Length: 486
Ligand code: GLU
Image (cartoon, rainbow, N blue to C red):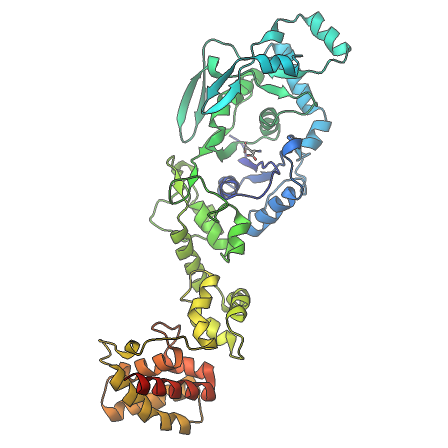
């Protein structure tokens, strides 16, 4: 095999779903792993399903995900045009369809809507399928010519024998053999002159020298018809890799409602691009070693398509969140702050040092929306129960806490330097004098200034951010609360 060439061939029909991005990513990785080319081809022959703006979503998504293509509508690599509606204008599909007609592998069909509707339907995989009865196959060459000359509307159909079997090979599923009787004489050229997506796909993959095709296994049932086309032309078919379905945690198809259907939806929910790409790479593929965090570069190094699994891949939101958290921990602070700032500003309206708060939460959150619950107390101490002052390990009780806070208050009032270090020194010398454990003092102070069991920083870190005035106000309020409740 010559140079590895893969393509992502989306139909511009809406958002880019997780499954689409996975196909694109695997195509990209197969090409890049082998030093080959990754191409973008827009499959827009189904004009009825075309959605305005969908092509832009494709470009935007590939760009954000870092899957830059070597060739495509915007980057000529000598195999263009790269948009099927433009390829059609070159006459390429009609030329190849006519070649098949010559070979007896395809035929003109002039059947009208009424006749087609009267034909028997069959249920295949839960869908009602019309099996064409080869009525027009019996037309003589002269009859066909006369119909064409008279301008009668026509389609061109693939001629599949009713007997025998067809075998094709898929990298994951191996050899699959089907009865030809189950295969419909599918339309190759539609009455509007456009090729069907199936036909254009085969012609283009061949004429664009594509070596590997990755796509969802919903296309597995069309694969035998593809194989017959390749055989009819005498072309070698590319390596086919049909990917397993992606399901949600309940083993249902991913849905928009569950919020994990499209890449852009995930980014809107605050997920980091690199984490989503890393996560998607593992939806069906696993590396040799038991490892989960991969940059795109590392994926390129490691990706071996023979390690793709056939079993359905589960979109595990818990795992994606965990992975996102790992990316946030590793992220350069400036970038992190840029992304965290809107969430911090939404949660905190007082004039605190948001950068310091961001540094505190960086290692504690999995996704940006988690920020709110970690920092809400900066805005206001929540209602809490004084039993929170009791901590077994710290050996504190509400009573001991009241005593500590009362003794500390005058020291804190006298203290001018409210930096973390200075405050920490102050509390430590108090601890020493008292002859107790650190936590015996830190726990009540932290509870007093936050009203929370878990905070993104220690007592003195929080006080540095709150400042002297607010810290004192909170300690006094805690003393008053304990006095009242004890
Ligand atoms: N145009 C098809 C789609 O968007 C591509 C299928 C394929 O990759 O062969 O699903």
